[in-house]
Length: 89
Image 1 (cartoon, rainbow, N blue to C red):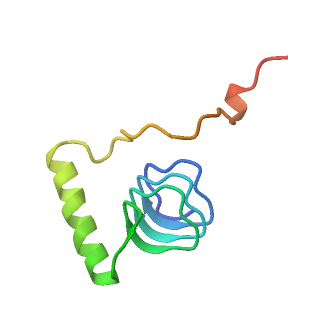
Image 2 (cartoon, rainbow, N blue to C red):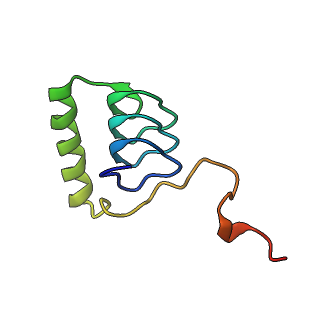
């Protein structure tokens, strides 16, 4: 994982924002359940130029509303599989 913000259960990816269950992907924003994808916003493909333009617009709008920087989406994954959720023995 490299340059990923507000992501949950993502691996082997880079440049993700607000993603969940995204694997082996790059440049995704607000995506769920993708594998081997590039330049996606809300699970919809974009060209490289359109992706960066649209993400900049979305981030600016979120910053104006003071929503960027907060992980405001709750995970859709139903299980607590972290060590912190294990019962004490």
